[in-house]
Length: 459
Image 1 (tube, rainbow, N blue to C red):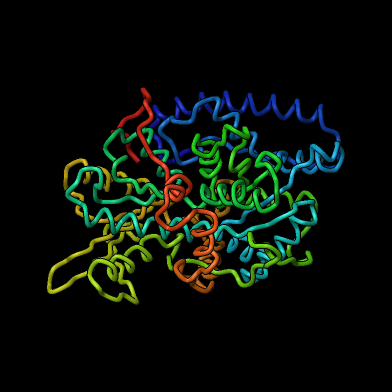
Image 2: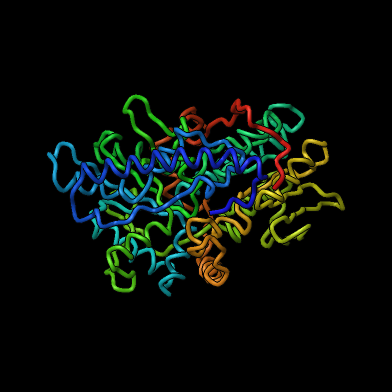
């Protein structure tokens, strides 16, 4: 797949990494085929180039490339084979967590309602041998609530250097990778410290859920189904790893498209699969209707933080948000006025061209936004390359339109109203302002020294 976001020089450097990773991936595939003989070997390996990742600044090392290639469908079937054949003491509890932005893809692909698609997908995964299927909405609840709280604190203490504004959203791993590897110390103080939904879901599954089930974290194999390849990179982060158990919080990320490839290999359609209720982290409860957050194409950080800040800081109730389109539909802003004065100014910057423009403004001291929702993909999470691309790597506009319609039809859910989240704050995290909240739901983003890092990349 051609990398459209790099200069020729950068693509040349990146191709060397691609070649190394492809070679390593081929060697791993060859070894796997020799070591494992089962019905699942009919499954074709997905061909994932490192250029599919949006971190096009040559920041993916050869070692990371190999580990990315290990995150494929064969990992799922390796665990299924392990559970099927080996000593029960070596079995793994197989857990799959579904990102909300992946579900409209399955709904559009198979002409289903989103909740129906989620339940049929759950039924398909369990027919393979998956033990639990969760929805990551609860993890996004935590991430949004902690981001809201942090923004209000930063705004009130905005004259202090450690509480710099604008605050940038931290949920998109492609954006975070770019910021850490390319933007030096310029952006790090501005990135929200709240973990992404994927990171928090990892903590929930390998922490809270593991204890509820009396399991060691290393006895759980946790897979995330996500719309983009950048999530595979995020799963490799050091703050995703527990040394005591030698366990990653997320063991493998599969894109929505890779799940469909499994269905195609097994000649299965979601339309023909018996549904099963999505599991809950809480005892024997089951999830009901799929819900989403109040965002047009994302997890809704901008809208939730904007409304919360308006109420908390200025005692103003905002029910509807009006976006002002700037240079293009992926660069928009929202403002709040009180007594003729603009008191809040938020922006949404999607795609690296808009991100670059926003960063250059910050560098020149001309970025006057209080909060920026940053997403690496133009069009937002639904447009992730793991689900919105045709076989030749082009955008499937018709499918994306169907996904946007399906996503917009999902009922909006307010994180503050989730009683399970409030219960977890008390039972799992020892209160809303505890040290454990900081340790579990927050992280630090910092510069990664790298010779290739440069702010002069042209997108």
